[in-house]
Length: 139
Image (cartoon, rainbow, N blue to C red):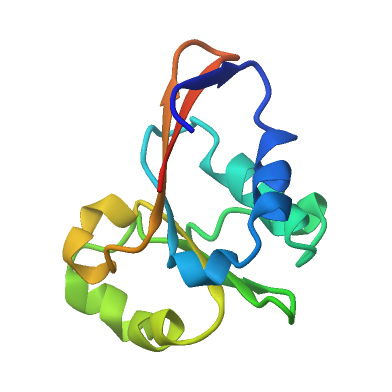
C-alpha cells in the first residue's frame, strides 16, 4: 500500500495486522520518523489487531526503549530515538529478538539500517497538516 491519506490512523493499523497471516515471517515492522506523525498510534492499532493488548495499554517506549506485549504472538514495541550507535541497539538484545518468533515494531529504525534484515515491512509517516497523515507501507 502506498500513499494512503486519512484524518485518522486509529482503525487502519489493526486491520493491517488482522489481514497479515504471519506477520513475524515478514521480519520487523519499521516505522519511520516524522515526529508527532503517529508512530505510537500505528503501533497501538497493530498491537490491538494482533490481539496482544488493548490500545490504552500501549504507550511510547521513548524512555524504557522496549515494551513487551502478548504471548502468541509476542510483540515488542521498540523506540530507538534516544540511541546514538548501533552498539547501543545491539546491547538491547535486538539480535535475539530478530532471531525469534516475536513481532518487532521499531520506531526510528531507519537510523540503523544495517541492523535490519531485507525482509522487513517499512511504514513511513508524514504529517501533511495537524490532522492528516500520509502513510506508505513498503513490503
